[in-house]
Image 1 (tube, helix red, strand yellow):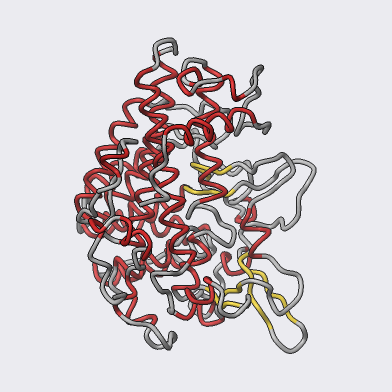
Image 2: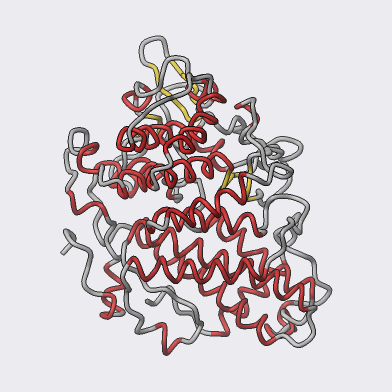
Length: 464
């Protein structure tokens, strides 16, 4: 895995580069040239150690699947599913996602694999150096280690969703990493749960930065509730999501849907802060357009038809653009396409509404129908819709899928994950995707990775 495994010298330089850059919170200034700092020294100083770990969030924002620009999973898997139509340049990697012509040589696929494992390597390097640090305060070490373990977990979670069986990497040891094997999906979930439980023991209950841009215990509970749900542990999914929902001091649903994706949103659990003050979210700059046809993507018209006529999410979170003949539909959760004097919108990775949906689904699976309906109706009432009553378990689960479709569209691949885990992909996509095949439920392992490390074989079905 040539782009996963880096020699120690290169990684040292990378970490030192983190602390030499100037940014509001992503990086801290240092007083000496980076070529005079050893990586050990980075993790013996509070400022540089914090900078190294907080830079992992910047990597999430800019270089991995969690970016919501053109390389992000929210765009690619929205095209892969039934959310978006593609208006970009024909034959580009995203066009292949839209048309289900993704090959093992697809550069976007390689980017997802390589950039995410590169981030995982950085997390592991930080964890190892923090473990060996002799001068940092123990509370700080625990916080930073908890954050690094959380980010490592988040990165593995997204790899698991799109590739299926994957290696779970917890070391920087080249000799180990060059021959890693893919492990079963359920085992990956077990590793994720173990990692997140460990991180939760280490990390603070409060946001250490004053903003919601670094992990705390509730951030970890939010991801842990999702992992429990996806792995079928519904009781623990209820427990973890309830910890977040019940913390009404910190988290609350914004009654005004226009405020849901603001920097100050009470619904935000984890946000990705822009690199520079005045910049806003990638989502606003990528999704929004003022005239048609769109430059990048737009929501499928058929997707909009599933909204109830009075759904406020349809009114406030979708923008219509017309040239007088044709009409296109832009995701309008993030309202700002251009920079502002102060950053007003951060990308929201985890938010409270998903926790209600997780708890509703878990409760439905457990047969707790009235409690599940309470959660769903909380979101429906906010959206201006009538409350639901007296649904069977099967009907309630189908309604939850629909509510997730309307609440979470354009956000980090949620729609694709739902089609996949509810076994609905073939039913939904076969009628609208000419080249769809049931084996497309997973992306291919990048072909160059299989050549470098034969232990990653076999290739996912349908790509040989």
